[in-house]
Length: 253
Image 1 (cartoon, rainbow, N blue to C red):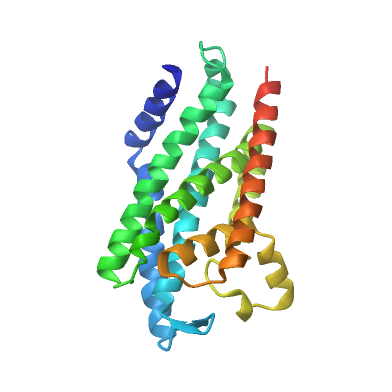
Image 2 (image 1 turned 45 degrees about the vertical axis):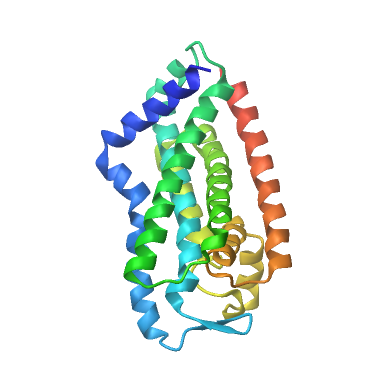
């Protein structure tokens, strides 16, 4: 088990020696919240109608920002995977006296810690600066959603880092995924404001499932039975991504 802390420590060193990377992980979602939240909150001064409630855009957007945090950290880690594999460091790691499961567990644990810290920053400053009213009793479930969501995105995006060989192809696909999955979701806007074809795409998007879960347990807005169903979908997404990722890493020589 000493291998897992060693992997966590390596990830810590990578982040602390590249402050730009750490900044994007911890503070970029908060910047999105401040810029889009303040801008759209003023533009939509009457708020957004959801489940018969009129809520400020800031409060609606917070759940989406937390989902974006998980996705962004998973994407950054995927890029680190790709670069390690591209320059051979990844293959060197596979020769170390640790199992591949321990290697993955160390990485995903560090990612979950970073995502939790980023969520605390976004929740704390969002409440303080923007005056977002949080459902404090449900905050433990928010962090459960952050941790499970981060693990899901870690394993899902890892697949692309390990399967794609060309740098230009990897960057093209990963950026397309970022654009499509974030904007074809409930992250920025309620689904009932979208055209039917985009609503359908958003409903099968794991970003929507996580954003809706986090939105419900931060501000208490949403349809609980639907949220629970989406939670089951996301757990299936996590299980499939985990299985696919571990199969791929076991086959790498």
